[in-house]
Image (tube, rainbow, N blue to C red; front, side, top):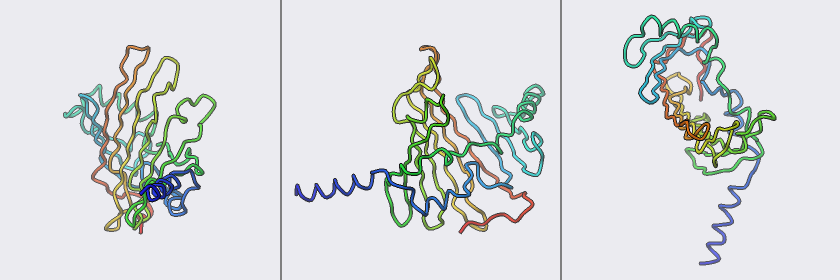
Length: 231
């Protein structure tokens, strides 16, 4: 029995040791975009605390015209809210500038958490973004690969312990989970939901606790080229 337990422990330990990124995961990440493939319009529904917002994105428009505020806190937006929204979108295009976590992973730190015919689950350390980056060392990113379609099914970015990203701010827990649809009926894999959880304090007294979900629905292809079809 002791000998059997030793072999089980050795097998598990070896699988969790850091190793280069598997070839099939590297291939799936090669052209992967966190926000999904270009050319797709959608409805975005955000819920955080007591507030909610429904927006529509149309890739055929330009800059702020791509976005339309449909609802604010369950009702049609008033004139002031609509004006502020347009100003915000004029300053930035959030859909086209979403950060790609894959660019910050340490590809030689891969841990194989599990593998089956259906899924592969792999965890990575993050590289420091710049000299002022105080968060990367405390974060890990986990990719879930759907092996039959060779597409990313889920990304989880989570803290491993409390950390201080900036002076007088303490984060006890940070977790972001992004889930994606599987390709079907001529559609590629598309972003389905983003769930964010933060627990922390600023100045020792101000709570930074936040729970937010962003759901994506009503996808319609509006690009100039044919919609890409994943295997």
